[in-house]
Length: 124
Image (cartoon, rainbow, N blue to C red):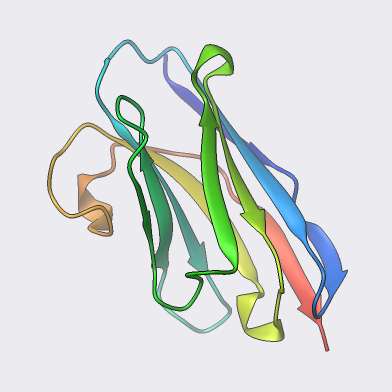
């Protein structure tokens, strides 16, 4: 059984930082993407960032480019999302998901396994 578990959310002031973790277990594919998505209150869920497990290529939404950094520890089956210079607009539930598809990383329907989400709140 594949399990995807996020952690690291919390409340932070604007300008602060948080580091989210996503640990995947029970997954046997060698080539896959792990993506971070977020959903703010009243808004649709959107792609934030993605990393390829095999070659560690990374992708970012324009809104977080230069502020967020995605990385992975393949030995620990864990992906991290370092979030710096946080702004109130980053407030959302952040989800981690796994995809074996080669379709564009932000296409949510291509992700087969999702975590339960972790809340990130940024105060002004």
